[in-house]
Image 1: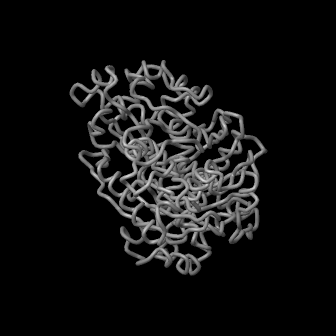
Image 2 (image 1 turned 60 degrees about the vertical axis):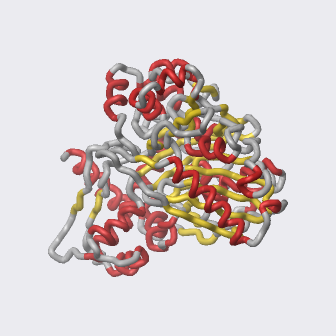
Image 3 (image 1 turned 90 degrees about the horizontal axis):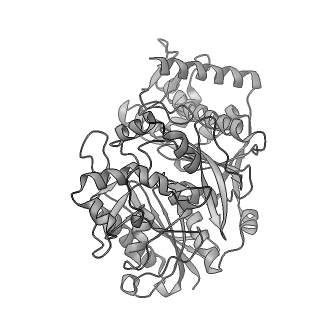
Length: 494
């Protein structure tokens, strides 16, 4: 058994990636599924789509690799976080579609809880802000709106889980109801200091604790798959939410190490070791990973629009046909123009948390055109990342390392990564293996299976593809970032 199967269940698609014992990619299969928008601000997934695409891509990856399922030592799972499911413990049938992390239907519930003064207690215990983003108020909504659901939950007939938990239940044929510490930490009902479900918060939201899964380490025994799925039982030995899996895949095991993942949005995590650091700058305190019963914490910040700003240039303004066209356009931009784009299309994320803001462009002249807009779009990602990292350093002090490890689709742009290094005034490291989320899940499973080396050795094996170093005058850097700050302030004042 020399292979590891990583299941990467995301917001718009499910992927399965087969790694060999050296953590080299052998095969990839991917399948998109339908997004459901039943009302304004509501986002749902059909649980049967989540399951069928995971099972289908797993089988397809095994077939593509030309191996037998008997060659697979373990399965690792990584997943879209916070998305919420409740199902019948006997039949396995969900009582409602999955409510996706993006869903905002519980905003009024969160505002009422804030008005009642509950946010400080919830933040102190969970590390999270009181927001519809997290699972807790989604659970409450289902119990409130599905007829008979709360009574059934109180009788122990129902089970709650995030996507990883639901997949483990399906893969094991209902024999295992468990999640890992990183996914539990995103529910807003898990006390990350004590590593237990919080009875007081559950009581506040009228969530019966009989719904809740067992919480295990990221590298642990999560049972074995049903034999009929792949022709043989395969152990499930690693689980982590997507951003934490990317942190592991980037080998950010030392306190002070930082990674930033650039997809549609951007998620930055700073390893704070065994210290649960409360944020004074509206970042999230969360669990980075838990191994051998030892919890490693992180500060996390997210920006809503990163790669999506390039999609806007393509699909909204139609000034490019492909993302790669932004680089030559940005190179051709007039250096005398200082166009600033604040891409608050769906509000501003950390450290501002202003969902009411909308996008704005500053500094336009008669000579501004596609090149200047492309440059401003790419620069906006760098500016927002600096906002996050400055907030992290303010919370963590000077212990943060000066190097940022990056991954995700947008990191393919050398121009964007060079500007990121310039505006941060720090090195930016792009790894050889860019599939860091799936790699993290595979590593956790391989670690538990005995195929992979300890974190210290895995860290030393991390391979750099390219390091970007600052090549801008510090005075120009400071002036550009000051203009960005004024533009954000103006946007928030409208």
